[in-house]
Amino acid sequence: MQSPTSKPASGERTPLLSDGVPSRNSSDSLRRAEQEDAAIHGTPLSPTPTARTRTVRELLLFSWALLATAGVIVLAVVLQHRNSTTTPPTPTDPIPIIPGDPGTGTPYPAISSLTPKKDRKRNLIFMVSDGMGPASLSLTRTFRQHVNNLPMDDTLVLDQHFWGTSRTRSSNSWVTDSAAGATAFSCARKSYNGAIGMEPGFKPCGTVLEAAKRAGYKTGLVVTTDVTDATPACFASHVGYRWQMDEIAMQEIGEGVLGRSVDLILGGGRCHFLKNSTAGSCRQDDVDVVEIGQKKHGWGYVDDRAGFDSLKLGKNVSLPLLGLFAERDVPFEIDRRHMNDVYPSLSEMAVTALKALEEATKDSEKGFFLMIEGSRIDHAGHINDPAAQVREVLEYDKTFNAVLEFIEESDTEGVLVATSDHETGGLSTAWQAPNELPVYNWHPEVLLQANASAEYLTLLLQQHMIANPVEEQQQLQDWIREDLVEKRLGIKDALEIEINALASNPLLAMNIFSKMVSIRARIGWSTHGHSAVDVNIYSSGGPGTEDIRGNVENIEVGGFLRRYLDVDVDEITRELREKMVVDVKEAEMTGMDGHPEEWFVEVDGLVGYTTA
Image 1 (tube, one colour):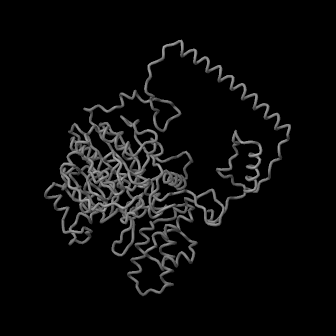
Image 2: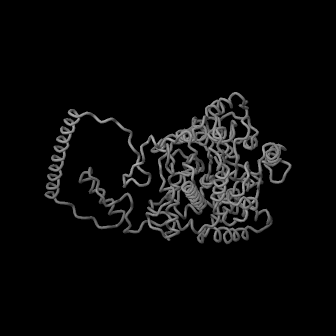
Image 3: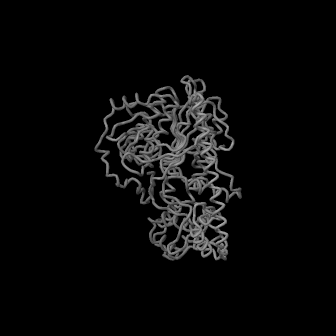
C-alpha cells in the first residue's frame, strides 16, 4: 500500500499529463509541456523536431484545413437550396434516448404516450440520498471495485440509471440545508434554510404526500434518521423551523389541521414520541404522542427488532403503522451490521414498506406514494467519515435496486425517482498534504480496514473514560491504540500526537478518528457543513420522467412528483393557509450567513451531529 506521504512512482503517468496532444497548442507550448512532464516523472526528453519537419507538418495541416473549409461551404449551399425548394416538415418534439444506453439510439415511444393517463393506477417511489454528491458515488464505486476485485466497468446500480443533475440553492442562500431542500421536493417551492413545509414569510405550502392522501393514495415515509428530522418532516408537517421536532411528531401522527396524512412511518426518533417522564424521551413536555396516535388516530406501533420482524417484510402489516426502531438515529450501516439483531437496515424497511403499501392498495383504484431516505450519508459527510459514508451509499444503492425489482415485478405501473437534497462535506477523492506535491491516487483499502464509525468509536471512548475515571494517562492511551485505533480502524501506524489528542480531547474524538482515516486514505474534505455543488438525479424511467432529464432546479423534481400522481397540491396549500396559525416568534431567522445551531447537539454529555 502506498503510504500517506508517498509520491508518484517515477514512471507513473498522471491524468493531467496524458499522452494525447491538444490540437490547438503551438509547438512551443507543446515543448514546454513535454519538458514539465519529463521533469516531474524523471523520463528522458524526446529530441526537438527539426525546422524542416515543422514546416512540412504545418503545410499539411494548412492544406487539410483549406479542403475542409471548402467542403463545408459546398454542403451549406446544397442544404440551403434544398430547404428553399421543398416543403418544410412538421416539427416534432425530440424523442429521448433510453437512459444508460446512448450507444444504441433505441428511442422511447412517442412522448405523448409517456404522459400518465388520469384514470391509470400508479405507484411513485421517491428516494432521497441526503448529503450524497457526485464524489460520494466515485468513492463508493471505486471502493466496491477494490473490495470485490471487479473490473473498471462494473458500476453501481445508481450509475446505470443516471438521469440528470439538480441545482440545490435555497431562497436565502447559495448553500441549502435539508429542510429547504426537502421543501423544494415536497412543495415544489423554494424556501429558506430551516423551513419545514413553509414558503418564505412562514406561509405553509401543501405537500405532494398530503395531496396524494387526499386523492386516495396510500402514503409512507422510511428513513434511517429521526422521523421528525428535516426530510421526512417536510412531507407531513408544517412548522417555522426544523428544530420544532416535538410539534413535528404531533403533526406526523395526525394532530395537524389536515388530520392524518401518512399511513406508514418507519425509522428512528422514538424519543420525540414519548412523554418526558418516560425513560428514553427527549420531548420538552409530558405529551405521550404514541398513545395519542394509537387511541385517536388508530396507529399500530412497533419499537424494536422483534416488532419489526413480526411485520414479515410487509406481509403482516395493518395500516396505519408507526415503527420507531431507535431512540434517535439508526446506527451507521458500518456499525448496524454488527447489531443486526437490534436494528433493521434501510433496505429491509424499504422492502417492508413497499409490500405493505402494495397489499393495502391491491383492491384500490389508486396506488401509493412512498418517500425513502438514505439519511445518514449526510451525517457521515458532516463528520467527514469516509469509512462510514461508503457503507451508507452501498446500502442506499442496494435499496435503490430493491425498489427497481419491486417495480419490475409489480402489476401496477410504477416510477422511481431518486436525488439528493445537497452535498455534504465537500468530499474529494484526493488529498494533498501540506508542503507536499500532489499525489494522483487514493487508497480504498484504508476504508476496508475500518470496521466501525468515528461516531461509535467516540461513544466507546467516552463510555470507557466514564467507567475508569482514575485510569492512568498511559493506560488510557494504550487502550485507545489497541482497542480502538488498531482493532477497529485497522490503523497500525498511529502517531503519538494522534493518540494523545484522543486521550486529551474526548469531545473532539469524532473528528480526530475521521481525520486519521481520511488522511491515510488520501480523501479530502472542505467543510463539516454542506456545499453548493449540483447533485445527481436517478430514475427508473417511465411516464413523464423526461421532464427531469438534464440539469434542472430541485423544485422541478417536486413538480414532477405532483404531476405524475395527478394531485392538487394547491388545494392543500389553500386549506393550510385558511386554518393554520404559525408562531413566527419560534421561526425568526438569522441572516443568510447564519450557522444553524442545531447542527451540533449535546446529548448526555456527548457531542454529535444531526442532519443539517
